[in-house]
Length: 222
Image (cartoon, rainbow, N blue to C red; front, side, top):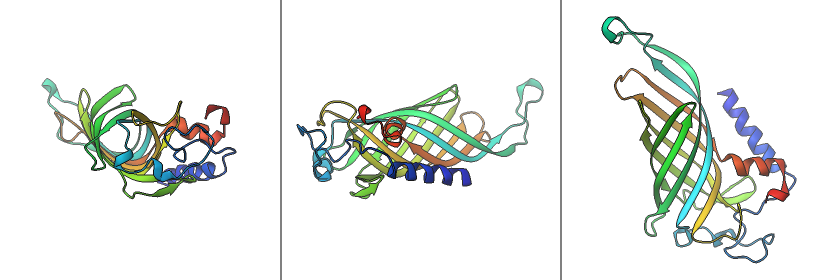
């Protein structure tokens, strides 16, 4: 837990002392001057939602894992289990589309945890709250609920945190938009065939590409 708190503090401190301010959510749609600042309300709200909003993210969590210690004759699972603390990492991507003008979004996601691949669907609740100022940028709060599975395990997670549009290339538009952010996340995983094979972790999830260039202050990347 101390390690997780240290990670959050380092990221937050580094973001506030970055050498250059990236072109983020303060640029209006179609603004001909990419370095000019506009009201952040130009992108917020269901009426300004992009058709496709997508992001990549890295997840680091810490929690408890339950495993069977082994097997006995004829492949029968032993009745005892071992529970230990564990670290869990994941690298994922997601894309979502809006549901009318409600502020709700749905879409698919995928994640790699070591050699294990997971896919599934997610529900995104935007504007929770509608204005959320973090890392010197006025973004919004967001809830994300995911469920899915891999070859041997089912998984589900619930996260809440901050997000803001990021200009990877070209002007902002309503077709597609890349999102950066950081969230707190609770994740649970369980084997399909063995209910005693499970894990539960709590950690942080953040978008790595925009975070890296923002922390390093590499203006040529903007």
